[in-house]
Image 1: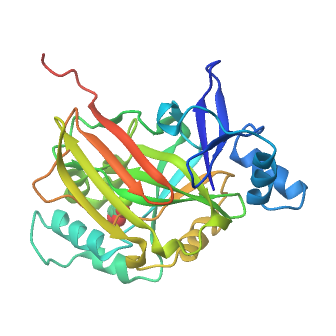
Image 2: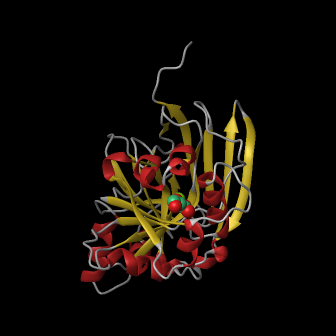
Length: 297
Ligand code: DO4
Ligand code: MG
């Protein structure tokens, strides 16, 4: 069972359940957190609450593809883990050494250390949802999407559900100096999440998610790769435990779990590209890419 938000006929956000058969049922709650709170009050799980409701209602006639989807949760903060996959470690080493293959740097230490790398990625105002434009930075010539599994947390650090995230990144800025990480990671529309949140209790094994990334340019697919969360170096609970340690975590915080897919070294995103990140069981997060600088016509 997944939870989505879309714009209804009155132009207001509507929470809805999306079944495995892709039927959409409107839900009578403001947002996912209100729904989870209601379930707690009734001493039932979020899934049981949704199932009870949809048994008494009819699905929408409109199909998922006809809806104007919104970000599934207005996450107050998005945090991200880094170097949680071998692939990420190797690519970080490559960019930090000006393009040496099989180089060794402090990123090896991060990969092997007890403490994971966690960084602040985005706020609600910078985070966009499905079909909205992710922006490029004008001061970077090496930009890529980072397709990642996202955990939606409550303030106790419990996982409410799983979503898809794009941790847009500037490889040249990060490679120049690790202290530039916030600039390589955070700018307007540099983080996308959605299209749905799969309720945690409906996920048997979060280490069995497949992640697929496709990039289209001028109607042609210019990149496709896939990986699996089974390749994660760390446990998801370990990432959460470090995030909540001595920290205030707000209801609805999203924690991205690191990238396992990196496009080839000579690839950079361009204005007009389209990024698709798919996690079967959650959905497909689609975002066009836009330069913030006016393109010459
Ligand atoms: O070390 C920098 C960030 C790495 C990252 O974002 C990732 O591995 O996904
Ligand atoms: Mg990342």
